[in-house]
Length: 499
Image: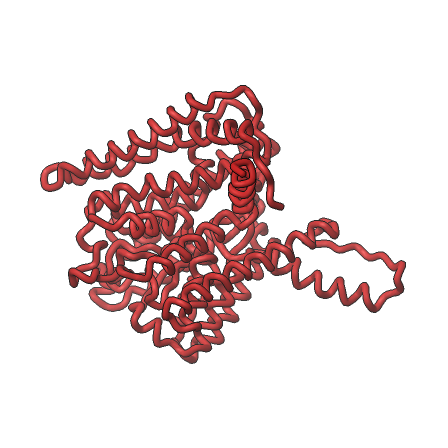
């Protein structure tokens, strides 16, 4: 699983990292335009400058890497995995620059916020007051920075590399390898690049529908767009420190709790946590596609069962909302974190299990994915059947009409084992640094499941080691472990060469 890399391999990797960063630099144009539209140059002229400089730095790094490490060698899957890891680590840092420059955040905090957005996790240091001020950073952030945060989460829902490629890479095979390495191998069409374009079309349409739903529920246009991007990407980031509590009033409810917004967000989160392939089939007029899909049906079943478990503790509306916020990894809160921290342990346990499972494969949701859960459960039955039947007996091992090989089943079980191992490491680090075990488990599963529900561990001034561990958990959850071993392989091989 751990792959070694030569200096020649490294040259290919850095060349392609440069190409992706060069193209991804265009993302910084978006907050710059938003800043101009909101006339922020009148009161904060430096904001536009910061976005421009961050974009220019990204572009120059890309050009320099591509020029210095020019190579005619072809990109293989071995290279693609390391390229993805490096692109994510570097781009997250570059995307963090506006947070650090505009709000004066320590770079580790800015990196955490950027990683949380791009991995569609939603944990936020900006939501709570800082040690030096009673005001949360999110409440003093310019609107363009709030939008940048939402936009990063929206981009992260599909992937940095997918955004950068979009048919721009010169070689189809290279683009395909990078897309697959980033975890976006679902094919809606025979051609992978056309599949990516179709995914972006569906994603944009769903974002527009979500924005319209939230606007009709009483949100203003800016918040409706931000919350829609955050919900469809199953991120769960809010635009103010009071979160959805601040969206309670509106022309529909006149100051009362706006349950229409809650319903709309549940629908949008479920859309985001459903496989793009199912959306594609529906778009092609297969109107039974959703209820013919095992993952979609299981998602709803787990969501409603989870809700039934916690409704006696949280009430009907809160119970349903949090159950689906957890299983979709949408991560929105409708009560303050201080209250969530005091929830009964049983409620936390139910939500932990839901966040661990996550949404459908080929969706924006995190977790181990429902397909892996179903295969894992089936593999237990298959193993029991093998023990009971005569030694030479044969029976098909099918999932959704497809025969699975022993190797595929083993890969699923290994993934779940490694996924659990990283959670255990995270819990160990957080408890070592003073957090209690139940809240640590909740926070780590939320981070690695890219869910974003919090019991208050994530905050300004948190232990730097715990903060770094949660960054690793978010990163591992988004790239689904396997590409991580490519960086381990490179480090081990590099140390060996130095000796």
